[in-house]
Amino acid sequence: MRFASLGSGSEGNALLVKASSGTTSTRVLLDCGFSAKEAQRRLARLGASAEALDAIVITHEHTDHIDSALTLARKFSISLYMSWGTARAAGADKADVDLHVMWGDECVAIGDLSVLPYNGSARRTRAVAIVVFSDGASRLGVLTDVGVATPHITSVLSGCDALVLESNHDIEMLAASRHPPSLRRGSAGRTDT
Image 1 (cartoon, helix red, strand yellow):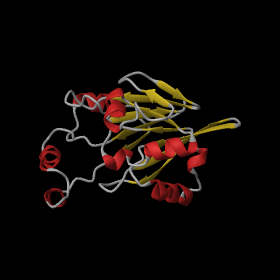
Image 2 (cartoon, rainbow, N blue to C red; image 1 turned 45 degrees about the horizontal axis):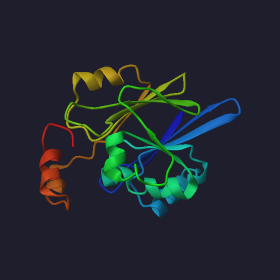
Image 3 (cartoon, one colour; image 1 turned 60 degrees about the horizontal axis):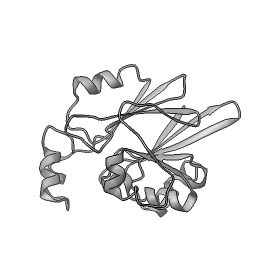
């Protein structure tokens, strides 16, 4: 399994994960928080393309994680995977896309990869904060938008061969951001947003 970040931050998040077995290859984009044009540009920089994606897996409905996911899924007939709550919040449940609903702690097979979504905390009802990818030989853990590490998070991510953390929290930038006050308060606290 190989992976590469297309970018991480308040302006957009995306991670390309690729697994190969024999003559087959699976490419999954985890989150798609950039414009369609920018996502395609960043994929090209990695020698990949939206046309070659097998799926887009969305952790949650914040714009910096889902911005052009529906657009790319429609344009290139890419399967979308996300929780039911995220699908409803993002409008994917009513969109003309190949939608697959993920349920927390239930493994999903996408080509040569298995994807295991986890809810990061009891406070999150719609989002998937933790995603573990496995190609049978190695495990990649991805953790997004979480305030603090909990025993549950530590347990879920134990045994991973690699870990990607989205950690772009800055109190001064948050205070000056264009985000609504409720989101800024949640982001500044010890719980996830």
